[in-house]
Image (cartoon, rainbow, N blue to C red; front, side, top):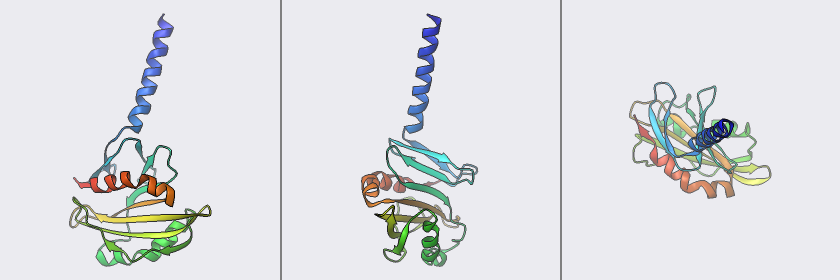
Length: 173
């Protein structure tokens, strides 16, 4: 009887831990001295990498989604001039035939002081793909951060509603 009770306790704890990992919730970034929070919808999880970036993953979706400091972006002008650097950056992750879909544009977000976006189109594994960059400063005078999302057109279309919720949830601390 004792072994059976332990077995059920272990199964419960493992199931609870797995559910907690996938459950929606609020994440603070950066990990130390957080500057902003964002909320993840159901089915998403987050993990901090060794370099301090935050990866966001949607169960079953093949996409790269990461938040990191935008170290070379210090003002509006450098944000708007960032396309050449981003083009080289995404090539490291296998995006080929990279072209900007347009210029860097202002992105109005409800809780963020400044935000800019740009899409880069290309091919990923022979399929049409997009890499979306959101460059933002949570508060006036804050340093800039980047949210990078890359995947095939199909994957980004399937996750766009959740992605919009995540972006709109970014809130300064």
